[in-house]
Length: 482
Image (cartoon, rainbow, N blue to C red; front, side, top):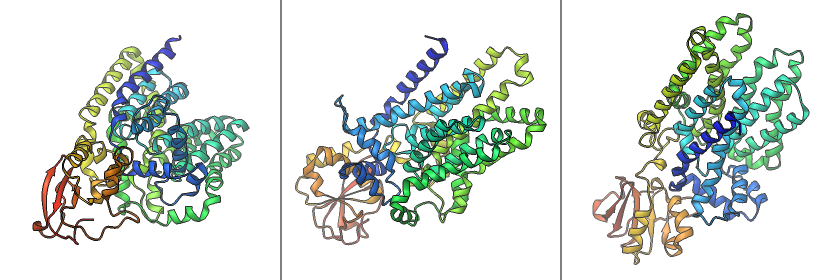
């Protein structure tokens, strides 16, 4: 085995061990929606045609459906489903190393970039999440690699592969069009250096839009309806700020070195400066959907595009190591020092469930945070204690009502596979399930410290847990929290 191959294998094994604990997280609201849309569909065609909310990430849901049929190890259902994105996360790290090592110039740069990505809060959050964001990141990474290859030399085999990857990417999440566009921008300096630049530009820029048409044209009416739903965050500039902060906070150490490297490169290559100024658009690219759409997307929508920034980070580090000062010092010593600094930084960021997330999460609305430290990855979000309490103490309750903020679909997921008796009693106000009145002895599960009724005499708190409170109704209630 070659030394280079051994290095990447050891890194992937170490990454796999580090991510292993994420397989055992509690399933949360959006993940439950994904699983329910998967199991309720009779086949893959029905999943494709059931595009009614943005949460139905079609390609990922289809892939998860195929994956769900092969649990040969007999793992717990939620752990087995998470295993798919766990493997995709390792593929991302391996692909980044194998395909971009020559572009980054050294194994040290690959190690720094890969380690920074691995320990970043968003990567930790979505490394095993039952959502399509990790698959989106992998597809955008492959598309960016192909766009760089096509920018150098047009190969129709690679063009066809680029079309397939682009179609799968937008079929997972339509807003992945942004990440595909950023991959094209990354290749523009190479495109404009060639004689047939216009042909390459049309191919690279047009194929992602062609993929969008191919995938969504058969269900155009449903696609348009989903676009009209208006889900997102009203404060456009705040979304852009949070996206930048999320990336910069987790890559701060190597980001400084990369910026120094880019400054050095631009000063030494004055004749090429204008060509590489296209990369400035990579920084402002997330602002485009924030300003152009009728409402800014949720923060998590931008997470898959981070992989293009990590590629840019690696290129900047490559130029940093090419500095005259770096060449005058022993390269091994410099690389070792940078590696130690990066390792310490990411170790601190990973300490106690991603310390950086704790530090920077104050910038987000706690209910909307999905890039730093969202509620569903915190230690206090657990359901087993609540469910055990209900089984042991309250078989007589006719209705167990769960408020929206307490994540009712998470309860529904585990009740569906573990406790059909309580599943029939469990109610919440989502979709067609509307509860207008609670009776005496009914139970109410709410988020910690949330109000239940206008009069405290109507309910009595009978149990409290780190994330939930449980109340018992003493009389009829019409004004309970929904």
